[in-house]
Length: 112
Length: 112
Picture 1 (tube, rainbow over the protein chains, first blue to last red):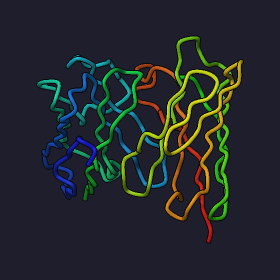
Picture 2 (picture 1 turned 90 degrees about the vertical axis):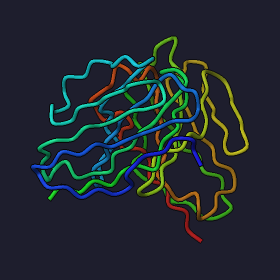
Picture 3 (picture 1 turned 180 degrees about the horizontal axis):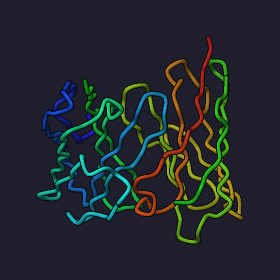
């Protein structure tokens, strides 16, 4: 058990749906992350939050919207996704931005 | 995040020692070097982190030469369960949001 949980573990959604991914860490960490891993591609860092403040990232499409209401919870709101957004979405946390990251089990997302 | 270069793949046999080298020529003075292991459909798992010389834990050793432009992860007496992708990361993760943070990694295959 890594101390980082993600729900749901699997999600199938249509392109017009709105859904949210949830991540919770029980480690008292100050930083949280969202990653995307498409099939046979490297992990891609999407968003970083440090002390609940988001690190600016202008390269992720606006159909992905993160939210960090407190240091223990991180959400990824999804709307009008495309089939190419199907991937494993991983959440991670760390004490500081240079410390080891602890990953959750991931959410396997399929967009139809 | 400093750019890193690793071999794409390596093969080994059970019981052998495996050394995976990562090149990071533009490492900054304050950068740490961190290695992760990832199994299919799971999030990466921290293995070891170091700044200089040698670091050893119950899983692996990390060798860093004086110029810090490379590092070598050493896995003693590998088993079949060590078959995974190994990633080398260097530096502060904030600078790499939206990019392939973990790179391609090294796919290690341990054979019986």
